[in-house]
Image 1 (spheres, rainbow, N blue to C red):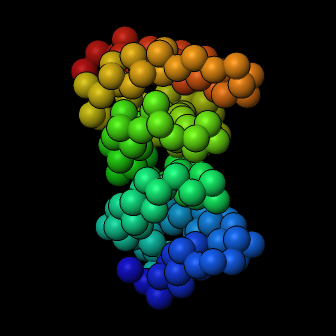
Image 2: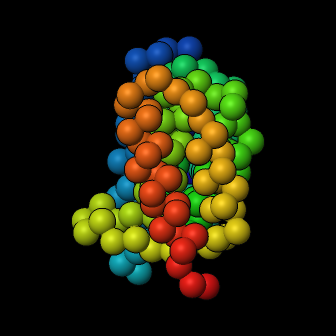
Length: 171
């Protein structure tokens, strides 16, 4: 892991909430810019994360998110900016494991990350990404969420539609 990424993760783990939030934002931009380079098959150089480094960072961020600290909800936002083929399975597993126990804001961010795996931000075209077998499990969990939070409900309805679309696609 590159030193700049280690430094950001250290700030996230630190006691300063403002530094934590700033580090999450900085890491999100770094992840997003790295993904743009990876998708275009460009060299990430020393400044950005390679796909292998993204995998490592995703595992660290998911492990931190499992503590359910309120300030860690944004970690799923960062994970959602990684290259979709490498982040979908950790996001699916996180949702399937913690859907009934995670705070609503974290669930919201996890669902946004899941949608980022499935929808391109520029054209809203869907991409069927494996492992497709987990889509049915995710769909069942999403449909089982009962919430009065209108923001979360709206996101859930969108996510359910997208996952249903995925399931309907041929292999």
